[in-house]
Length: 304
Image 1 (cartoon, one colour):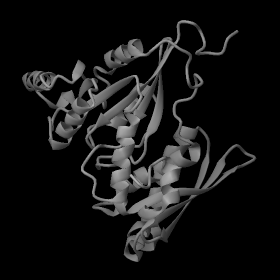
Image 2 (cartoon, rainbow, N blue to C red):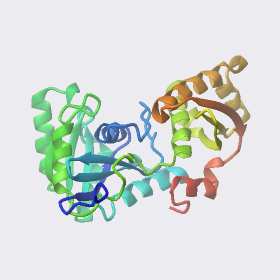
Image 3 (cartoon, helix red, strand yellow):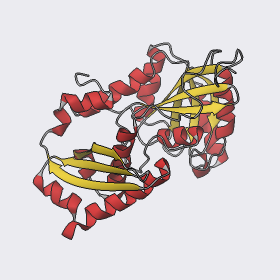
């Protein structure tokens, strides 16, 4: 018997999901995959790297590339994130451009549309968060975007509730070229578990810490030990840029770091389906965002 995904009628292809920051790209990818492969927070620029999520639809395997939001970069990390987003759109079988229905076509979305036009690229338009807008306004937005001449098809969805996502999934599945699957049937992402664990903890930092601190911090998994009882012991380091930031992450009497660890551990146990022993440490490393090795780990171009 042939392995799953090798039948003559199989389809497989790559789809880049583009958009301005915080339009719902990661939420849409997670919804299509049916599992959490990318962290989601209300803060912009949460996604820092290209993440592949694998969606199965009948005989088709859709490899979704969740890209960082495209915006005007200011720092080295910003430039690398934007370069990764456009790199994710190269040599794919389809491009999806996500537009926030409530925001409409802002300057960042306008710039993306302009660059797609310059490159001669066509895209599938997905208007997200349609549950927040009246139907006449949605139709007017869709008509205005269709007039741009960049989009082949338009879908209106709510990635959060799932409304309209099934139609989009079926469309993308039919658009994939014939060929064997690139990933095993039970694989949902290309993200290593160590990196996923660090992302889950970073997600909690975005959710629980205010203002700009999450952007001045990062998380690394330093140790991953499989235990005889089937559980896993994970040690992570939260890097910040200044001593005052270390105090904020720790909190009074260590309360904040314990709350971060408890929430991340619960999330990880659900994802890994086993007991997790998570230990968090906070260290100061000035200019961690200028460390080439860290960019390599994230799959980002340090010199972008």
